[in-house]
Length: 227
Image 1: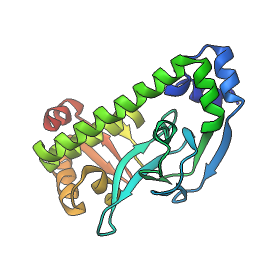
Image 2 (image 1 turned 120 degrees about the horizontal axis):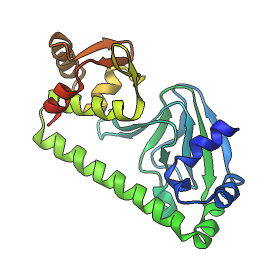
Image 3 (image 1 turned 180 degrees about the vertical axis):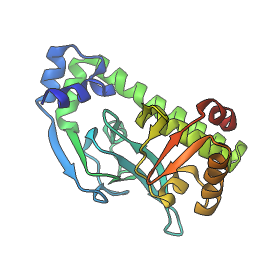
């Protein structure tokens, strides 16, 4: 329970609260468990709650016109999603699917709205989180227009490293848990093109490829390539 509370405390929703306020909000939390590949909600579903990831990873996806899946983002512990429907109660704009076994804390909008009215700083934190997501979306759109595929691959790996990376004796281990196809969707390119970029980075000694993971061996060169 202490570990769960610690993860929640790092979430944007709880960051601005004192211990009393955080405890009051935690009282409204319900736990949701998903197995790998299970869908929490689908694009077009009615949204009545937001979620904070306690453990595991969840991907947010949208379906293209031709039926292909577009991977918008991969989220991990303490990250939040589903909050858009709190301010704009229309159907979900994305699907949420477990990348690994995952545990989430769910907060119903009916429980959260009175709390926001009493604690304005919670609303500010939520708006800050939405602004951050919008800024990230703008960066992704800019990369798709101005950055080549190897640069986008480098940028996505660095972003995953910031959130999931762990320093090891031989480099920065990034267990992203994504298949080759999912990583390609995240980059916005074909699997073949993304694999070619990864192989080039490996040949240059910048990284080592592992199963659903990479080890970054030269972070600085990866940063230069992402620019």
